[in-house]
Length: 258
Image (cartoon, rainbow, N blue to C red; front, side, top):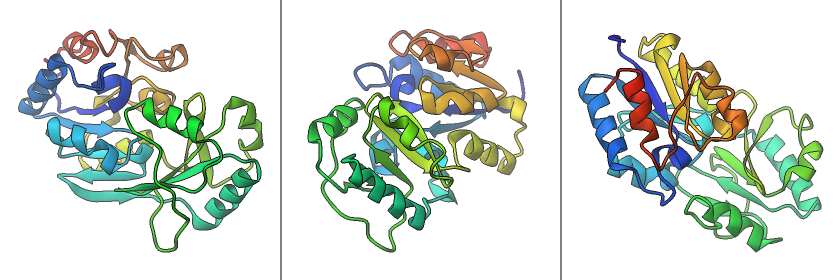
């Protein structure tokens, strides 16, 4: 495997262990990949302000954020896909009618629009070390890269297929990401690969969550962490050890990249 690879890593449950810290083996693996000349990027559902600690501590210059809605090469934004305002307004009104809380995600901030069930919002957000956003409102002129809608799967049928502009990607039992229908981690990774003249077979994606399924399927090699859901593992070419037991390191050794 001597050709230059594009390696895309999810953050939560993949690059970070259960304590929300990177393992030493992961730090060493990233260093070795860069020294070998491979292209290394984050591919996360987090926006920039929620990913900035990981970006800084692990020396990332390239990052795909908001489930593919934004991409940066050498810290410069090269891709942007925001939510359609008209459709978003319609969706928010429908959610509020059902007493479903929503939040808007900007590149460097977020805000919640309601306070129907603070406990539900806090439960979802603290699951990856964050917290519920400050209260705000849908303003004009602000790019919305992603929205959150806090509902469990019993409400799924009220949304799936009803909003052609949006996909609803569940990442927590009580919350979904709202992303553009045409956007995903996978599509943005493929876009970057084209820019870098890296063929699809040389793309390697690492992930564990539902929002990683397409990335694992579309990559040349999809690597699911041992802690991934079974439905995610089914999309992968390799299932490695979990995020507490050097999963990234072991997979890269298996692939003879380190």
